[in-house]
Image (cartoon, rainbow, N blue to C red; front, side):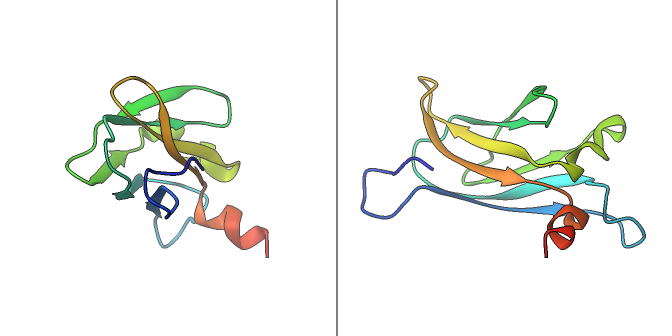
Length: 103
């Protein structure tokens, strides 16, 4: 994680939305940004495919396409960029079932 101009680290707070019946699926990736100057974010899937996410203020909400909903049993990455393409912050993202299997 890259640092911001203050002494506190730049962070992305996120959560995933799944169904009660299948925690291996990710329906949405959403969260808030605790770093200034974010122009856009990307979600990089485990297979290196990347999608751009446009923030709304300091929040973001990405609806995962049906065909990709099972792909985050292996972690991907959400990355925040400034307008010049500089990485401001990044964070791993995975299905709820992935994190439970790590315990």
